[in-house]
Length: 184
Image (cartoon, rainbow, N blue to C red; front, top):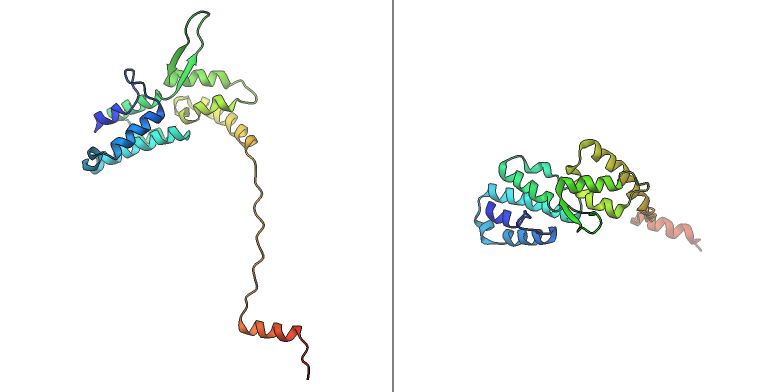
């Protein structure tokens, strides 16, 4: 199972994007290998699948849930490869693509002094804040959260409809006689 999972993850010799990796993991999840695997192996796969799905969605993947075993360290390194950054090259040279922690540092370096922050660039880093140092992560969140809040429209709550009064037989009779005078 571990070999199949690693085939679905990016590596230096296997450059996969997040959508491809997620699709390949879904194929494994729907296959016989997953079906006949033990419960522990299935739960390990489900954790990895969850991390990849959250990165694909652009949310925090809670990477620390994977643990620190040798195989999980390989998975974490593979997940780092989902974050890329095109580093501009010197004049006449080709741009260089960097991955993981180096990409996170370069993206953070390009936006940390911006006011207001460019959310299109910052959104690339939102799922990968676990690659930043704790202080960098705090500063990143303190810059991004207000920028997101400023772009979010606040919808006022709907007005509640007034409740209908309870209509029991006694109330109905009282209302009938109260509105019509009794003619004798």
